[in-house]
Image 1 (tube, rainbow, N blue to C red):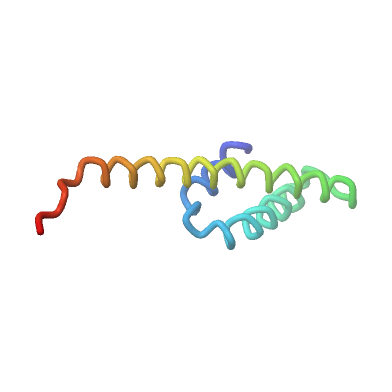
Image 2: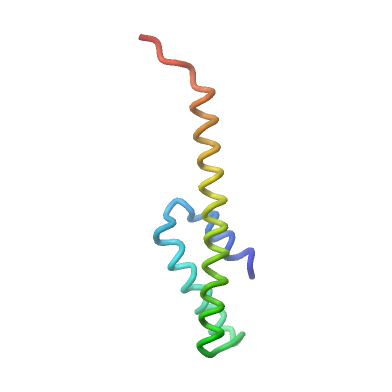
Length: 81
């Protein structure tokens, strides 16, 4: 299940302000809906764990996007004036 949340962060990392809270909530709802656990300590722990995994995915997306941007600008020929 952890790769699921990492993938969510990686795919939707551009919109991180929405992806992190929605992914965290979706993780908790998924665990409760499948009967994996219940109770406040479980929900809080699951929320923290889900958020951490989404954040790692978002950071991976941001790093890949930054690297691609840097490569494109490095390889782009200088403009002639």
